[in-house]
Length: 135
Image (cartoon, rainbow, N blue to C red; front, side):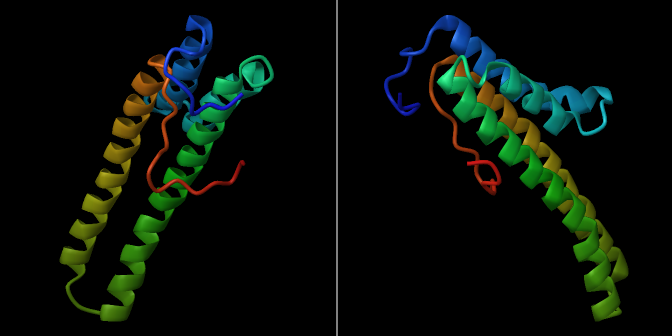
């Protein structure tokens, strides 16, 4: 069964599980370490065999969250590299690093909410900037 077919081809239960699979990534915001990855991973593992839509959206959510974690880890490293190699303009690079990190966090939250709404509507969401670790 293709997950790209008509909206509402999936049962209400399947769409709800897919939506919560995306929303589980927000568990990190309440203080659960790596909750952005663990939350969707648990939901995906529980329902991937039962619901093909949850399988595809779970993979998408996990891939996106791993990608965002990598980008968030690389942002400060990029700033340190630029400060050390340029040797000047340290405050500007630090500000750029803070803005970059904030943009990553905001993108993560906004895309997660968009994906959850799409899944609830029975539409597959394709996250931008996601590296496909799980295929």
